[in-house]
Length: 92
Image 1 (cartoon, rainbow, N blue to C red):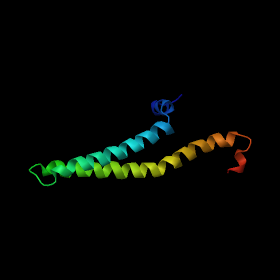
Image 2: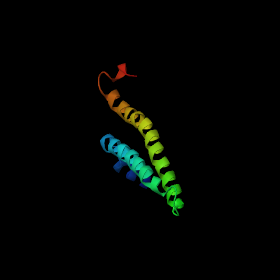
Image 3: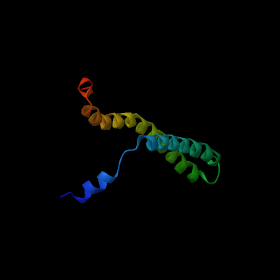
Image 4: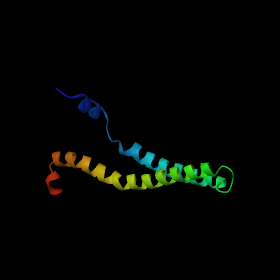
């Protein structure tokens, strides 16, 4: 009998196409936020600049780190499928 965690994880799947679009979207969002909050750098709303700068930093560098691990995740998931093929033993 499967546990609840296994049932939920079986429904979730790492979709490389959607994930690639999300990585680009997060990076662009971080860049746009960073450019937008620059106008609050010297004003009475400096707090907006500080929080916006932190959010921008986290989203841009988080997407860069995610883009580094993205091909590794795809490769590790595809490795199981490659083993099932007749030429899969050449890749191991």
